[in-house]
Length: 90
Image 1 (cartoon, rainbow, N blue to C red):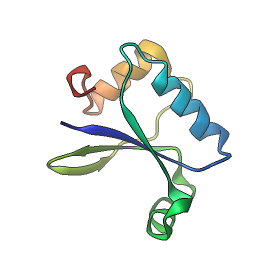
Image 2 (spheres, rainbow, N blue to C red):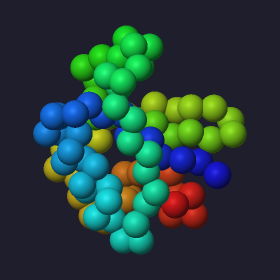
Image 3 (cartoon, one colour):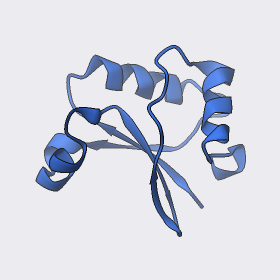
Image 4 (tube, helix red, strand yellow):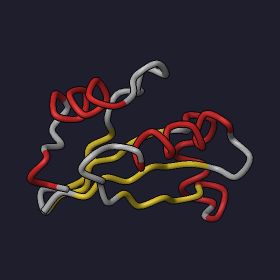
């Protein structure tokens, strides 16, 4: 089952905003938050690209395009579906 991962860093208002929007979706989604600054390899890979969503599945890891900052609610859920994360994955 695919998992939604939010690459983030402490003190990032954009990261906090996206996490809040994802948590507010109904039905709620299970998301994993990973602080890129906690791992030098992740920091080197993602650097200043946060917030960034990854879709992990048995087939590998897919970096999703940057989420438009104005998306929320139903529009955010439709965007996630368009990029491969369905309600059945939640």
